[in-house]
Length: 295
Length: 214
Image 1 (cartoon, helix red, strand yellow):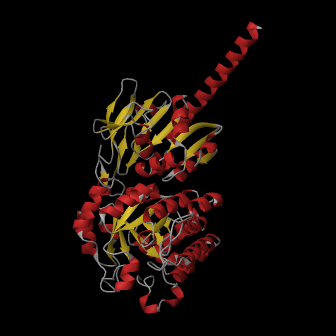
Image 2 (cartoon, helix red, strand yellow):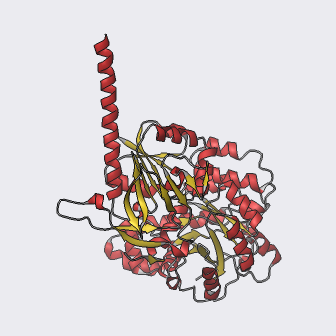
Image 3 (cartoon, chains in turn orange, red):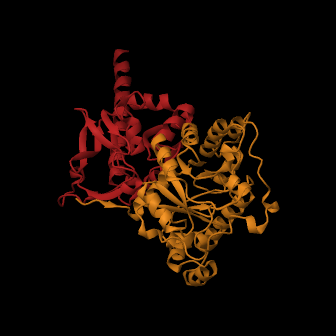
């Protein structure tokens, strides 16, 4: 009987297998090993963590394929990698490398200021960032099989992640409350395809898995996002820009699993050393904010 | 009758939704206390490495192994199947060893090779004739590379077993929780009911034995 590869269910399904877990940004095989040992459910390979991109400036691109391959050889958990928004050839290269998921990410310098990648053209699944429900549904209509709220990457400040998650959840509740004949206007307001808005209203939930990202720096940050309704958490600079990455990584994983258990979160948060210093999002000028990239 | 679903990481909620659709309550298992009173267990898909580490560090490993050896019915999908196997990637000693099969992880390839395929499952035959095929979703799936003599095969893909059964344990290398087809869950729940009846029977026999000796 026939096999069918890269189906929507298989793409969406891998994200479902990652739920309840923590996906960690790594730039070297050594960091990938630390992440896996701490209990990460996947790693995200990139050239520089967002905090460094923010500090050093310059053009941020897809990671060196050599590094990606070495990370793949080092860990057994899924390996994701970032491509620039609209850079479909970086995505083709990542697919050729057989990465398990591609993050079309605002953290890298966008390659196209109008179009995102047509993600339906790929067998490998994509995750994309969003700040609200409309942006999420636009990405899904382009073929994204997983969504993450953007937050503000590399800031170490959770405020944007909270804003985006509350926005998405609030809009989901709003759509669910509408009469069927109001969904067309809702689609217009959300700037989202009406068929997906109708599906959200019918099923009462998000069509794909939705993780939180951008600003998670402590176990409590991770549990906060889980309690706000995230399916899992991406941690970027928060781990490897802290004093003790291995201990912090393990603690963030434990707080994500047991996000409703404050005593446990208190216990795992002890003695982790200094968290990443970060920068308050309100101090970051609009021109340097990463979350506004993507359209 | 409630079913414990291992909720360390992965697709546990999908299993709970299938159980709910069958009218069966589920409890999320994150620590040993959560196992009390469960009539059966589901080990969901997810990342084996992650689940194994967390099961050890949260004190769940030994209670799970003990319950399994006592014969509690278990439905294990993908990562769950790997956790139950005798031997993973040629190495023994890193799993619960409750199911006499050897597996190779991610043996169908990385995510780009994940696939769907219809499976013939003769066990699901209905009175009106042969069963409809089961649409199986394989995601970074493990391959079952050896089965023990007490293990029976419920379904195969290209000549290799992908659904196996040994006593009360049902191991699948794919994801029935991602489809609307709940036949594997219903099959598992039958085992749970049988097991419960047997236990009650044994208890009554023991009580009867005690009474007759008095």
